[in-house]
Length: 289
Ligand SMILES: Nc1ncnc2c1ncn2[C@@H]1O[C@H](COP(=O)(O)OP(=O)(O)OP(=O)(O)O)[C@@H](O)[C@H]1O
Ligand SMILES: [Mg+2]
Image (tube, rainbow, N blue to C red; front, side, top):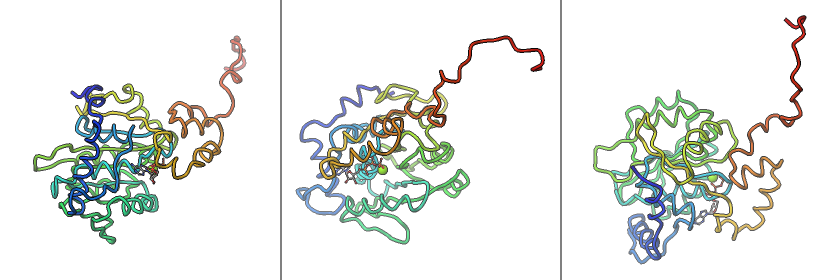
């Protein structure tokens, strides 16, 4: 079983991070390994999550808005494209329009690979492929019966009201080859229809960055928190994003999205405070029967 220490120890040594991404760039474009790297994980949650990819079966990176979660998914798939045709991935959002931003960003990061527009699919020179798909309900999950993927990604997992589709798709995580690091990986923020199942499944079962083994499935999973302050690239390019995040609404919403606080929104559907509706105990009058 993977331990917390495995993940912490797996943090990139100085220089090692560059070497990995230079290598991936080579497989991506066929260019010399000395070519400039187009993407590498930022120090912090992104690097920790990518280095943990062989330590657990399922990973959830998230918490705050703008923590670099969607970029992480695109980079995490890229991290193993050297496995060639044995590395087939699928990345889900709940609706098709929600895929737009991921597809736009993938064109920046996957420069050199071929995008099949009609199929919504990337083909890498190594033979690896990544499909973008939307899936609304468990009914749609049935369409994937018989498929085989080695990497499954879910962006904004809290947008699905249950984890039913997420769980059903695990049956497609398989390989007839000796593939390294088959995994399911997801991102998301507090709030949304799937807040509670994600919180219960990932956030509440163990301390952050501490793998938990599901007693039913035997699969290990880990929650890695990420917040806007971890996304230095975004803050450098758009320093006022932080102010806009603070202006999204009430205190609870700001705490949820800025701090990645999964408890901030509990009870926020009722704006009255609990103590305001409590009354002193009294005897029930007989005519209330
Ligand atoms: N490793 C990276 N290298 C370069 N730029 C990055 C990296 N990670 C994130 N960014 C920049 O930060 C932007 C926002 O990151 P990203 O879309 O991953 O955030 P997010 O956490 O998914 O946001 P949201 O919670 O709103 O969906 C990216 O579009 C990109 O410009
Ligand atoms: Mg995102």
